[in-house]
Image (cartoon, rainbow, N blue to C red):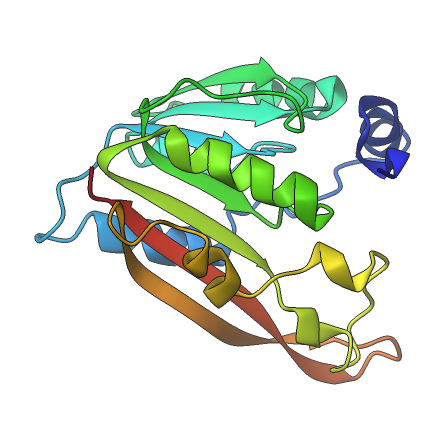
Length: 214
């Protein structure tokens, strides 16, 4: 396994620059969380934000009234996330936890929503992580996984990681036991991005949302 995923790498990446991310929540999280608040679905309470980074998704969820646990391998990122949250009055709450996701197991059947946004790992690590996350969702709760499409490189997007790091929503959905999960969304959603020469290209977010049945 490459050391790009260890704590030293991520602390150096965050520590050697200013804010890395936009500070805005991931749009696919916003879209799918809105569906959870519809009249046909009971609004959940406890959320796990996996690989929370500088905390934008966790803070947004807490702003919607969720009780959020934000988890990341980087202590530098978590310090930034906590500082961001401290500046705001949030209807919900955020607890920040430092874990290496390759070895950490979240408590079983504990979260109404688990969100993993753009967690790109070698497939053996990814499959194990996603299985642990699935086991941590309560019956009636939601697992939301979003990633870059494998086809993005062919579209002109710069992807420094190897092809096996990316996945389709269908692949993630097929790994779930159909007797235990209802896959509500398994979609490849296009959006515009800048190519290597500044041109506009179309890339895709792979979005999988499933509800645990039992």
